[in-house]
Amino acid sequence: MHLSALYLYPVKSCAGIAVDEWDVDALGFRYDRRWMVATPRGQFLTQRELPALARVKVRIAPPHLRVTAPGRPELITPLEPLGGRPIAVNVWRDAVRAIAPDHQADSWFSDYLGYEVIFAYMPEDVIREVDRHYAPDGGRTGFADGFPFLLIGEASLAHLNARLERPLPINRFRPNLVVSGSAPFGEDGWKRLRVGGIPMAVVKPCARCVVTTTDQETLERGKEPLRTLATFRKRGDAVLFGQNVVHYGVGRLATGMPVEIEA
Image (cartoon, rainbow, N blue to C red):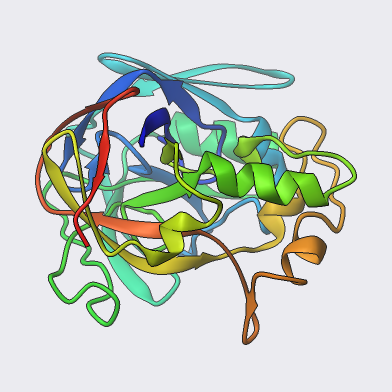
């Protein structure tokens, strides 16, 4: 088995970036979900509430983050802000210290979304721990829903697509790590793995939401894949696809690297 694709999402719930190789730091992929939009009161916002975020495309061009969206001029903002107004934001049940470094970025996103928002950044010194109920050895993440990496097997998507009238692209599921050579849903049984010399733990199946039903180009929403997944991937009230992963080291990952299952 090997890594067949890598994706990072610098701004939570905006379009992802496919890369051939990328650095892994303490929070996951470097720059992954270090930014997000939130209400003025600090409540995080995603495609669940604002599907138009899917059409926001982001490019990392050090020392800048460059952001585009239909009908809007390009936003250029610092990639690693040195300061900003302190704010408190919430991601699910986590209260997180952040900064809002750029009033221009606040206005850019507010004008595009038609909804007053702030553009929040997580500084390097902020520690947001993962849920130790699922990851007893701990770990850190950025503004991700809960864990630093989402892993999906290519064969799992192929199995799902074989059940659908219209196959869906991988971007519906927003993985970080895509693995080739495993059996369909083989990742369900993995506990420990090593990729590029970095130890990792598979800690929790990913419960899927309405974002998976959103066409990332047209923003049209349907019933798939949740309707079909619910027929064979439902556990309690949750529909599961993909696995959340925590890492215990830093380094660099690249497509083609072997994925070694240790337990």
